[in-house]
Image 1 (tube, protein in one colour):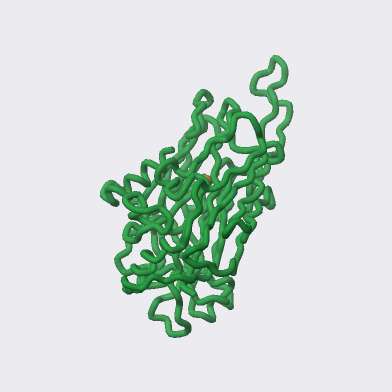
Image 2 (tube, helix red, strand yellow):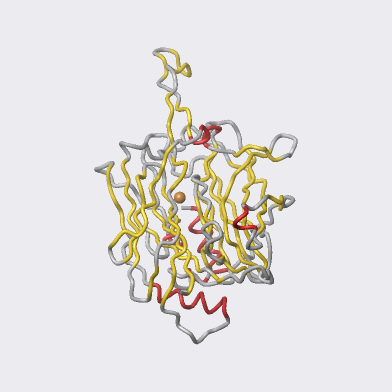
Length: 381
Ligand SMILES: [Cu+2]
């Protein structure tokens, strides 16, 4: 709920009230060979510290333990193409250094979601005024790596202008009760290539947000949808499908060609964001599923939390032994998801089963709102 008001403020008033978090030194990483052969480099940027408040025992709100942060994003380059992206979260240790390991749910830190917003671009699915800024990339605790090139088989990326202003909005939850705020940083691993790169020529990719909460859901409700009261098994679809003709405006910004109205696109990537309790997100074109964003739980120990058992009779605080709770650790990403044209109708449907996979709950056991978001990257065909 907090993030939506921040997003709409960004859309309507710009970046005036933004705080400037520290941008830590950029780390050079090694891009895999198929990417490096195209001239693509890989770096990791780090922004923070952000103090995430602890959960409070008697706070039954959805936002108990939630910290919402917005700051200027640390960008890897200018006049360049971002070809791959993923988020991470790390702790800031007592001595001020950043932890080598990820901060994740096994140690009580949960990346609800993080978004990059380009203030100089318009959104493909949400019209202005709210969509007068562009949702550029987003993910949640699944920390999906999106590779627009599909391991070097496509020469395409998100073009970052010399003067684009990009804002990071992060919602991070501290699942530890009453332990005081913990400082974390948000990391971003970027694959990128300079526009002047001579090894290959890159096409400009358009991000497209498909949301069960509607085209402007991020701005109006933070894309959060309430869980139905009477069932734990349910599916939600986008209220109104989206057609690609609206994407023409975004293309024009990148190409300076303001008259052309492109009709055909390649869908290079289809990624998904879901909350715990989800089975999958179906991304559909004209009613036919193009990509099944299947959620997988607890693949590594970082994605498994310990839930304290019931108190022993007469011994408050002494639990009967904990149980393990698995959380979404990856969501399937579809590369090369076909083509699309102006008349196609795109939609997403999120399938949840809170009996099979426990969702996020408030301290008094109420189901928290869920999400279902598809993120496409298109290029002109
Ligand atoms: Cu989310």
